[in-house]
Length: 341
Length: 222
Image: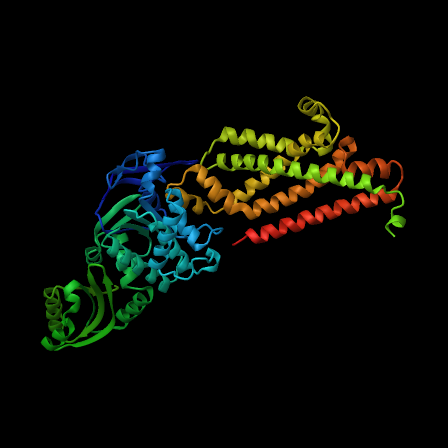
């Protein structure tokens, strides 16, 4: 669906040139929800803007559904953009237009007649759950409702691809989840390919099938979301995964406990997919003469399965503890003995 | 009562002068709006990081605007006498004041337009581009529409300044209330004529301000 080949983007600045995107190659499949995660300045924003020609690469090519977006210009590019929609962090609605008129705008651009426009707008308002708010102005809407208008507007011309530029970063956690659910629903119902950029691993976990991690303009890690959660390779990926699995307060609590524990060991277990649903702890307690104390645990759902982490404290004879660790290893569970020496 | 307060005022002459002032104001505001809007759009679109970014065009336009905005109006009228004569074959009457009024006010309004357009969120323009909008669509449906309240309040301020300019233009023979107040009132020491002309000018200004505020409020949906 989308092929990004050897793409590079240089920006000329006063102090020389800046490489925003450096030799990126990506293949995004049809119907996929593909996430790009990175901190600000990693180049993800520039990358997503090359998918609809708002930026053009210094070298390399971008192909979206058979159209070479990186090379076409003028009318041809404008035509292509009608099928590659975008939603934005700050919604970017026209405040002088009502909800209806905002959603109608891309249809006006595409030259759709008044009657068809009205009908399509009605469908879209229904689809994004804004029935009854059609005549409101954006200033009368909440952030979540504004983003719903943004989504309806983006879907107006029945696009093949939806680009999401930090679409939930300005929203509170509940609203973020509601908008993400709407995106998943649209993806399933219409088979729409979605490319999103974010700095929140929560967003990736919740809706993406695959993820690319960007750092300094390069894609440093790429894979299925669950795989990346299970075995993050790069340091930056590990940090992003920890955003979801180990909130800051947990880390502090565990550090404190490890320091206080005189005997036994603190172990972090990670469960992925099927193993997340097995009674590993029950088996552990039944098989070994150990005291097992659960310190903290969490299970997160991703689009390809569950992912969980559990911190336990095991105490008993040194030999038993060692055998228990071996048992856990054999149970297809990620095991990490924590120590802060 | 009115006869006693304004013994020297010849009302038919006063109404004719009022008509001339309104005529000069309306025509010059209309042309100022169009020319100022075009110049303002040109300034905005050719400025840095914009759709038609062009340093040469921006700089030249900017210099022209600044020069005409800086010349005191009374001097501008005198400087434009040859131009007016070439254009209209006369330098007397209400029409003869129009070139100076428009050339004096349009650059002033152009700057206001430029500022109003800069206030528009860049993201909204980007959104329109991402939908495949043409530049002409962006100008008419995004730039002008989104900045309309500011454009209207700007033209209100400019129109009031233009009423003042017409009074000044009156001094050199363009007619209108300024002319009447100067010739019939000041030079012949008939203070009541000057006062009557002043009151009518104030009423015109108040009406313009009221209309401007009304439409600005009505258009502003932020």
